[in-house]
Length: 317
Image 1: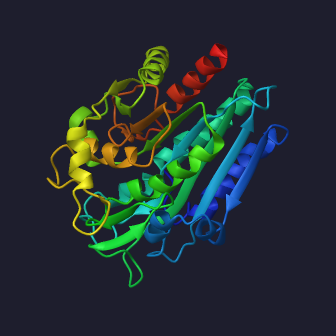
Image 2: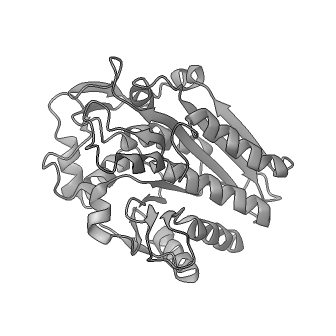
């Protein structure tokens, strides 16, 4: 997360994780899916974000086989992997834009959790999915008002190109269901609104499952890297399904109001699994002096909680 974006492109990110997992080749399989594969999977939302950059997108897919029971339904972890987020045509302010090298924090924490699970030989099957690309302004980039089609066929009106994380996650979440998972957890530095709501005190969790929430919360109590449950009301869903040109709008109709909640409601439109949780980690992305045992800068939170959760889930089998 700390590395400069010109040093950690989507290709470099994927290669780095592959190298770290090479130590566990007996129980981990790495797939670096190229653009042709992404196109074949009809991930139109993901592709629309990546097309503004000269860097090619990669869909990183990790399979950790920790259980002796190959038929055990896997835990699927999905991470937002925007290796640099300029905002696209809806350009971000220049002040602080350098921190957007860490907009791949969701992918970093998810992949790190799998590396750690493999090192600890946690007896559970985990699949990691990380759509990796840059969000850049160019003549090929998404334009406000464009309409794209996601993997599940839903159309999306893009009114703000800086709400790109939910677009790449939409396709990844659709794909996650193909593994018939025990649970799906996605992590993303998704909204500035999450930072406004909770700051660095806790990761915001939006989930359709009390069972999943209880286990995530229990894990966070053990690690000290806290989570806090946020609402998934239909109130927010109506704000993203009210779109003039498509099935969904990528920003809520009331713009800034409840931004973290409308983003979660948008993601929910691509989830049919009974146990799904969205972790908005924008507020815990950096560490100043809040966590004394972490160095200052990009924090890598909540990797510890994801690992503890996986270990707890393994003991429940």
